[in-house]
Length: 481
Image (cartoon, rainbow, N blue to C red; front, side, top):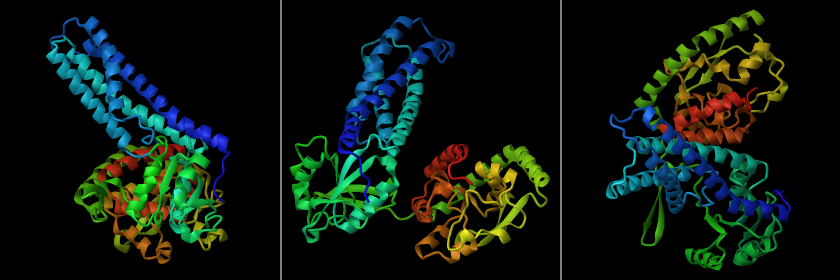
């Protein structure tokens, strides 16, 4: 059944999401800008950025208050506090950076034209510190918002519109990603499905597609989500939008029949009144370029040198705790189906393969949180993914990459369907979207979806982001066992 929340509770939560979130984020921005201004005043002389620095403390202090207000006003003008920005996507950060750069340009031009004696060191430090602090504050706010949404707070009430099949697909995504804050209260279906009480996924049917305004008023919806089959023509969609014109708080979202495509591959180009979506080609071939290989070599070599002492200590502990080799070699399938020997610190007893639990039968990907085969040092190294340190040598040899899909076992590949074989178009990785999204807590379907998303939407920026998120995932040890 669809998730249900008492209407009064959900309405209060959605009101806070609409009204309270912008104020919460604006307060955080104000705090960060003030901190940047204080630090800029404090260090403008001690850092000696410029050889000639006159005593402009009084002017600088007076200007600081004006700049704090001006910076916030520019961010407001750029739409950095629109309620649909928070919690997901990169648009929020882009607006903050662009608004900050415009603020710096305006301040510089105004100080020059008005011949105001503004400290150059203060000006440089203010924006050099302020922009990173603003971004850090936004990330911190985003984490808070996402955690509250996962706990059922700050949600927005959503009505899905479309055919039952498309509605179920959208609902599956929204249910899988609760941090988005979309609470589905029901759906509207075309007249062909009149009489339906609920969809196969358990979403209550609130009415037909021609009763959008009535459903919004009755159920106090915040978002109207048009999926496939919602309307028969663009004219019908335009008329339905007209009906909601006076509902300023209601958002209209249209989901195209395109999923798991990164924003870098999508470009909207209006032509003759048609919002044409240009979809870039999948990027699996780009993920095998020489730049990524050089990055892998440098990164793996550096980490291997730094982690060398830790690796040697762990190997000694494993040998002392349980007789047998410290390094475990296992056949894994790499790029284009090539089988290679994947290196790991041994975390199980020597004959672990002969003792594989019966529960593993029928599972493509199996891990047991209380696997009795795991040794005492193995529990620690698996919790923090230290057993994967020897794979740095696999990266140097070219069998693996620092970032990529999870390296599968041959028996797993034997069960792959055609779409899953695309995972083998790139080198497997020590870490990847699977690693930073829950690891063994994920279902097999989610693991495949994340790996295919990585293959089709590869970029160096995404690799760097995954590496940064890996640190948090490893320290949090979520899904690691």
